Length: 339
Image (cartoon, rainbow, N blue to C red; front, side, top):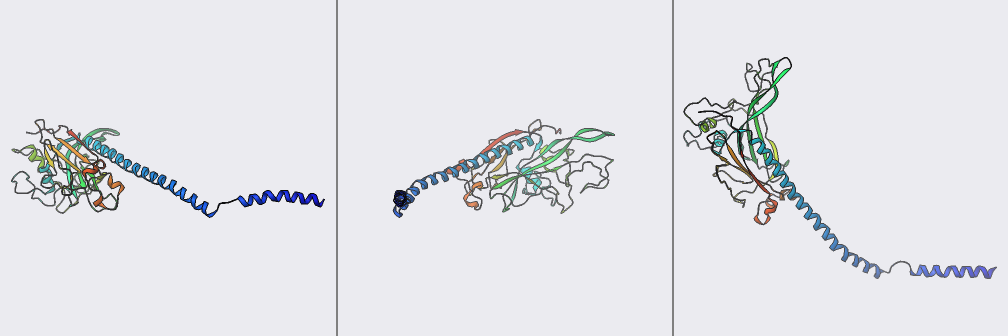
């Protein structure tokens, strides 16, 4: 019995000892494995980082192109309803920035506190009057209603400031004031209007229709003479709403592409333009009183990738693929009849 037990223990312990003897890695083997893994994984990791970086860059470019196209489509639809588009001189008249030495070109250029809202961080690029449909705005009898048209003044701005809400590039904002619908049964008094002026809905604060009754002057002079209904020192209640962000903010001095206007007046005026990420070329009113504008946009995809240093996201010819551009020419409607 003892002999059998000794034989079993001997035969079982020998393989176990052999297995334990050969298990695990030596320190040298471990170091060699680590070096091999480093040599294999490092290039793969670099390749993956490169792929992710390239993908992010291409995605930023694609997003900029899509947003530029969408913004241009929106502006196009807006301009198609325009009945009059102001050129650089007209915008200067409304904002009070035009030199008053130009005689009667801007009849109201010297008027203070009665102009479109402007600031040093925003430049008006497109300003126009449009005719807009209001559905079911007029009460006929009882519950019967009908549609009507109202006029509104629209302005598009190129804004570049230090706001942390938006990118360190520029952005385009849209501002509008709209007329109301006269209604003798209205109860509420409209802000900025007399209690005897009954509207439903109310006009926007500061709105006043353009006046075509003046005799002996051109349509351009009549439209340039528009002033709002605000009291001296008054302010509009409407805020500009951002249409699109990540517009190229590079100035001409910093290397932005120059303006190219085939026809029409450059807006902003040539003497005042600083940035060309958003500008327009407005053609004079034709014989049918139709205005036309060619609009240019240029995005900034780099600003999506670098968000903490404006100096690193400026236009350069070598990086032009990061600055997608688009332009379109639009002719407005013709609803102004004057002599």
